[in-house]
Length: 122
Image 1 (cartoon, rainbow, N blue to C red):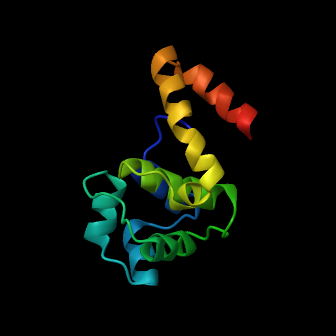
Image 2 (cartoon, rainbow, N blue to C red):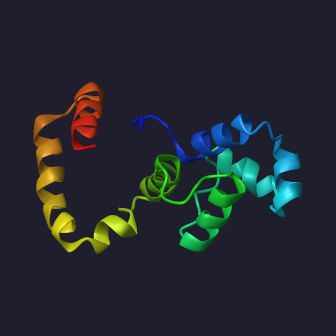
Protein backbone atom coordinates (compact mmCIF):
# COMPACT_ATOMS: atom_id res chain seq x y z
CA UNK A 1 0.00 0.00 0.00
CA UNK A 2 1.47 3.32 -1.04
CA UNK A 3 1.64 5.96 1.69
CA UNK A 4 0.42 8.57 -0.80
CA UNK A 5 -2.66 6.69 -2.04
CA UNK A 6 -5.91 8.05 -0.67
CA UNK A 7 -9.19 6.27 -0.14
CA UNK A 8 -10.79 8.34 -2.88
CA UNK A 9 -7.97 7.59 -5.32
CA UNK A 10 -8.27 3.89 -4.60
CA UNK A 11 -12.06 3.95 -4.97
CA UNK A 12 -11.77 5.72 -8.34
CA UNK A 13 -9.00 3.34 -9.48
CA UNK A 14 -11.08 0.27 -8.63
CA UNK A 15 -14.15 1.65 -10.40
CA UNK A 16 -12.09 2.58 -13.49
CA UNK A 17 -10.47 -0.87 -13.60
CA UNK A 18 -13.97 -2.30 -13.90
CA UNK A 19 -14.59 0.08 -16.80
CA UNK A 20 -17.56 1.71 -15.09
CA UNK A 21 -18.30 5.41 -15.53
CA UNK A 22 -19.31 7.16 -12.32
CA UNK A 23 -22.99 7.50 -13.25
CA UNK A 24 -23.14 3.95 -14.60
CA UNK A 25 -21.63 2.58 -11.38
CA UNK A 26 -24.03 4.58 -9.22
CA UNK A 27 -27.10 3.67 -11.26
CA UNK A 28 -26.18 -0.02 -11.19
CA UNK A 29 -25.75 -0.05 -7.40
CA UNK A 30 -28.18 2.63 -6.23
CA UNK A 31 -25.57 5.15 -5.03
CA UNK A 32 -25.81 8.93 -5.30
CA UNK A 33 -23.39 10.10 -8.04
CA UNK A 34 -22.73 13.41 -6.27
CA UNK A 35 -21.69 11.66 -3.06
CA UNK A 36 -19.51 9.11 -4.83
CA UNK A 37 -17.85 11.90 -6.84
CA UNK A 38 -17.12 13.83 -3.63
CA UNK A 39 -15.84 10.64 -1.99
CA UNK A 40 -13.47 9.94 -4.89
CA UNK A 41 -12.17 13.53 -4.89
CA UNK A 42 -11.60 13.53 -1.13
CA UNK A 43 -14.26 16.16 -0.49
CA UNK A 44 -16.33 13.69 1.54
CA UNK A 45 -14.67 11.41 4.09
CA UNK A 46 -15.10 7.65 3.77
CA UNK A 47 -18.02 6.24 5.72
CA UNK A 48 -17.10 4.98 9.17
CA UNK A 49 -19.76 2.29 9.03
CA UNK A 50 -18.31 -1.16 8.26
CA UNK A 51 -21.66 -2.01 6.69
CA UNK A 52 -21.55 0.90 4.20
CA UNK A 53 -17.87 0.28 3.41
CA UNK A 54 -18.72 -3.37 2.79
CA UNK A 55 -21.53 -2.32 0.46
CA UNK A 56 -19.12 -0.15 -1.54
CA UNK A 57 -16.43 -2.85 -1.55
CA UNK A 58 -18.84 -5.48 -2.85
CA UNK A 59 -20.18 -3.09 -5.50
CA UNK A 60 -16.57 -2.60 -6.63
CA UNK A 61 -16.21 -6.37 -6.90
CA UNK A 62 -13.76 -6.79 -4.05
CA UNK A 63 -13.53 -10.28 -2.61
CA UNK A 64 -13.92 -10.29 1.14
CA UNK A 65 -10.58 -11.07 2.78
CA UNK A 66 -8.51 -10.18 -0.31
CA UNK A 67 -5.60 -7.74 -0.21
CA UNK A 68 -7.72 -5.16 -2.07
CA UNK A 69 -10.55 -5.63 0.46
CA UNK A 70 -8.23 -4.92 3.39
CA UNK A 71 -6.54 -2.03 1.60
CA UNK A 72 -9.97 -0.48 0.95
CA UNK A 73 -10.93 -0.71 4.63
CA UNK A 74 -7.46 0.33 5.85
CA UNK A 75 -7.42 3.44 3.65
CA UNK A 76 -10.90 4.36 4.90
CA UNK A 77 -9.78 4.01 8.52
CA UNK A 78 -6.53 5.93 7.94
CA UNK A 79 -8.37 8.75 6.15
CA UNK A 80 -10.68 9.01 9.14
CA UNK A 81 -7.72 9.03 11.55
CA UNK A 82 -8.60 5.61 12.94
CA UNK A 83 -6.89 2.27 13.40
CA UNK A 84 -8.79 -0.53 11.65
CA UNK A 85 -11.16 -2.28 14.10
CA UNK A 86 -9.81 -5.74 13.27
CA UNK A 87 -6.32 -4.59 14.32
CA UNK A 88 -7.64 -3.15 17.57
CA UNK A 89 -9.59 -6.31 18.34
CA UNK A 90 -6.32 -8.29 18.38
CA UNK A 91 -5.26 -7.44 21.96
CA UNK A 92 -1.68 -8.65 21.53
CA UNK A 93 -1.15 -6.64 18.35
CA UNK A 94 -2.93 -3.55 19.71
CA UNK A 95 -0.69 -3.59 22.78
CA UNK A 96 2.39 -3.29 20.51
CA UNK A 97 1.11 -0.34 18.48
CA UNK A 98 2.38 2.41 20.83
CA UNK A 99 5.95 1.08 20.56
CA UNK A 100 5.60 0.94 16.78
CA UNK A 101 4.34 4.54 16.65
CA UNK A 102 7.12 5.82 18.93
CA UNK A 103 9.74 4.05 16.82
CA UNK A 104 8.40 5.63 13.63
CA UNK A 105 8.41 9.10 15.21
CA UNK A 106 11.94 8.86 16.59
CA UNK A 107 13.50 7.49 13.43
CA UNK A 108 11.76 9.83 10.97
CA UNK A 109 11.21 6.84 8.69
CA UNK A 110 11.29 7.63 4.95
CA UNK A 111 8.59 6.36 2.60
CA UNK A 112 11.11 3.90 1.14
CA UNK A 113 11.99 2.48 4.57
CA UNK A 114 8.33 2.33 5.56
CA UNK A 115 7.48 0.44 2.35
CA UNK A 116 10.39 -1.94 3.08
CA UNK A 117 9.11 -2.46 6.63
CA UNK A 118 5.61 -3.19 5.32
CA UNK A 119 7.04 -5.78 2.95
CA UNK A 120 8.99 -7.43 5.77
CA UNK A 121 5.87 -7.56 7.94
CA UNK A 122 3.94 -9.23 5.11
